[in-house]
Amino acid sequence: MRALWIVLLTLMLSGCGYNTLQTTDEQIRASWAEVLNQYQRRADLIPNLMNTVKGFAAQEQTVLLGVTEARARVGSIQATPELINDAQGFAKFQAAQGQLSSALSRLLVVAENYPQLKSDANFRDLQAQLEGTENRITVARNRYIKAVQEYNIIVRSFPSNLTAMMFGFSVKPSFTVENEKEISRPPAVSFEAPKAVPPNTAVPAK
Image (spheres, rainbow, N blue to C red):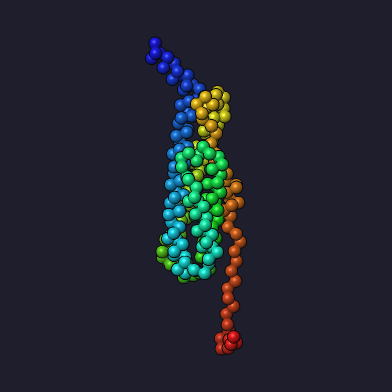
């Protein structure tokens, strides 16, 4: 008799979307783990990138400090699996990552003004790795967004929403692409090249 009740209960749960909720929840966790993995990959590249830039453009203190501070803000956020159940914490994480993206964009814009830096093999390699990582981040984020979208639809739809409420499945936060584009948009930066002194022209003594 007990076995029969277990079978009936299993059928009822599966019919109300419980199994689907479990499956989509696991997909979100896996997608989120990949997002964190790629963001960590980017964070690990930054110290070597910074050291290389300092070797050629140490005077760019404002930009270098901006990257350092943005990376520190990202590191201060505990990016745990539980963050996907905390809308406020998730928003802070996204904002911090967006600010780091903006700081890195400024750094690469500045690098354009230093031909020796641009031609340095180590810098080119790090830049290529950073670009590849940014692409991986985009792919991982898109997978997470799709997984959350599928899950949230099930959580909000009848009758699976009743099952979700019964077993504590709630809507999960997702990336807001529009807002992050605003945060990470690089500022307009222009550099004026120094005016060349004509040949055979004496430079006035100071």
